[in-house]
Length: 404
Image (tube, rainbow, N blue to C red; front, side):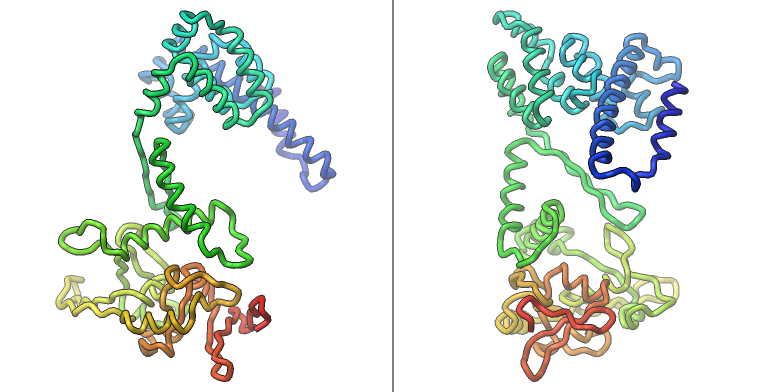
């Protein structure tokens, strides 16, 4: 093990700016193979420890529990490592390919997960040789990506255990978790059955593949995340969701009036707070307040509410319709996101005395609304041409692709 640690130390000391492109790609390939071999060695070691129940020495109830506690493995990773090690004992060809680094841990998991004792028994009853199956699937894994290997495995399962595929299809468990991170970001994670996933994918694809702005360079993952938020906003705005404690569900932002009215970047002011996700920047709160219902709550020295004013909406339905007819789409330079994706932005924020009017309102999609608040961009309507112009934080103009 000391030699392995020494080799890893040498590897960490390599200056990756020096090798040529070909050499660098060769290094990546070698490291990928090495990572597979290390994963295979770990799986074998875990299996040996599992068989000897060495985890009991530390008071753990199982090898999975020991991996989670002592190695800080994620639960699904610990389960996969233990299960893969157990089933690889019956699949020597797959085990050999894994040990040689020719396939990865995901390939091995795809194959071993399908090789349940019941299916192996059914294959034997049908005269299907497990050794031949092992060889075919190992060769498939060597030549294909994990998702393609999975298709081949599914075909084998369908032939050996048709009822088992029905059992798999009957697994409609769906899990979705959200957690607010220490950095203010929200982290999501989940899994769905095939049908549930198809519903979600179809809805997101419809939003993603709508009127995509010209020149949009965002990745598929970024666009999919934007579509998921748009799906939630559409549901909230539509009014069809169940009421929560007697009122329509809505996003709630709390911010001190003095903070809301302060100029951008003013020092000495704390931010606002979302009901669930927690603290946000003051400028983010101002962006959300641009096109929202606002309620005044007066509090005493001890922070207890003294008076709650009537909710006032910053843009009436009539004003919004007029702005949509005039602007037609997001007015940020080069963007043509449709009105239904947009907020009504106050060019001069109402907290700074700006009126809620057509003249002081502009359509901005969420991405560019954020750019104008948190990013420091500004938009102004040219009275001579009646066109919206966009300016960077340094005051220079951002020209649209039409050169306007």
